[in-house]
Image (cartoon, one colour):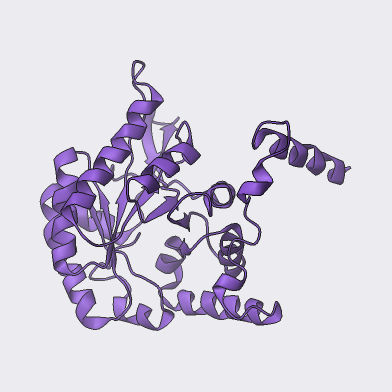
Amino acid sequence: STTMPKNGPSAKKDEGSKASSGPSGTEDEEGKEGIIYPEALDYLRRGGLLEYAPEKTCQMIEEAKKEINIPIIASINCQSPRLWSSFARQFEEAGADGLELNIYFLPIGLDSPGAEYEEYHLKILEEVKKAVSIPVAVKLMSQLTSIPYLGYKLARAGCDALVFFNWFVEPDIDLKNLKTRNVIGKGNFYQSLRWVALIAGRVDCDVSASGGVRKAEDVIKQILAGASAVQVCTIIYEQKFKVIKSLLNEVEVWMEKNKNATIDDFKGELSFKKQELTFKGVGEADAYFRAQYLKTFTRAK
């Protein structure tokens, strides 16, 4: 997701790209070390994100709805359970066409089983779905016990889309000053590609790809894996919104070359379809991936 900061790229310039824009509302305050995005600094200067997020994000949504005709997807991240539905309701009233729930926590409790964290996702989704009528996506982190199982449960609970994955600041150690610090985490394109391919078409909701997408080839690969949408962020900050039109033009050139009239003509063509995950007399997935693992080394030789 990305916001539309006052001094950042104009949302209206994005309209011709046919891409959705995503203002973001967050409750947490990140450490200042290593933050590169302008809206993050804007949040921090105000001294408290809890007060800033709903008001300013609603204002951005309202302004964007007046200027552009593409969907506005509002992104939410909270720590307090009660605030998820509150933020969601405010963003819907401001005109958001959809919501993306950025659910993140670090599972460090020695006495907390994986099921407890999975249930946390489901409870948040349930509360938000009660509060709004617009589509709701859940952006997952990659550190989960069973991504397929949780994805299946979220889809059953009414989730409209799953987003793989959420990327955050990472810890580092400053050896000179002997202190910890945060650095900007980088999206792992191939990790996202793997799970888009594994989940798309197997759960009753859309799948979106996020992380490490920097060129048209990356967009095409994610769609072939089964993605219904592909998110980009960092390259927009680097090259402004003009890069989206460039990406789309290159995708269209590839489609024409491969005789694809629409996205649906090739979406999911290289996903791990359900029938491919089952081997007669052998367990699911395990045999498939072992075969591919051995095949990789055979080809390398």
